[in-house]
Length: 116
Image (cartoon, rainbow, N blue to C red):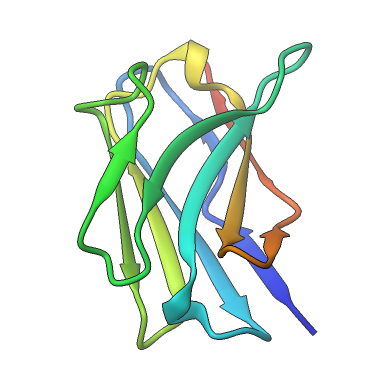
């Protein structure tokens, strides 16, 4: 059974940092591209960052470029999202996604709130 379990969310002040983790199980993690999405209240889910299966290439939404980094540890079946210089607009539920040409898996999400 496939599981994607996000952790690391919480309340942080503007300018602060958080690191999200997504632990995967039930599929061959190293063969999937991994992404982080987020959804703020009243808004559509948006792609935040993607990393290829081997970790050789990453892409970021324009709104987070230079502030967020995505990484993965294929030995631990885990993908990370390091978020620095957080802004109130970063407040959202953050979701982990695993995708290959045949399958598309989602986690349950973790809440990130940026507020003073």
